[in-house]
Length: 212
Image (cartoon, rainbow, N blue to C red):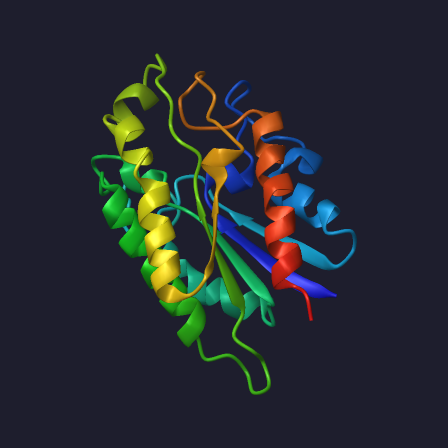
């Protein structure tokens, strides 16, 4: 059986904007992806709220810098057949980075880490899928409205930058914005249906990659 790593933030963790808790296991997109692959692969969910592509958030209680944590996770779960990267939403916070282009450069660095990690002898470098996160939407949420100031406009640029980076690096690309949209409750997180939609949308992408 193949092994897929789902590397992301609260959208991968399954944060529920309506309850401030976590979606049911079966509603989280890594779970839906695994079910959709019909036993061809197990999907390891590695989602952490607030995680960025490559930037520090010193206000957080845990390390949110995706580049610093990724090598540890690669070593923990090796061997891997595919790494799916869906990060960049938190990069859009003005006090973090605030730029879709900056997020794309962070994703580029994550791809480099996956490709250059010193895997054990006989372990192949995983294939990679870069996923552009769903667009942010306008919200009246007391905190996130300001936390992601100008984030709606910047999030609309993520897919274009990510597609170009993916093409240049020769990795697979999927735009989650084509199947999912954030909830207006907080403008960032997804309801259960939209979370599931990402997993369903990724099934054909991973099915093709996993073909012998």
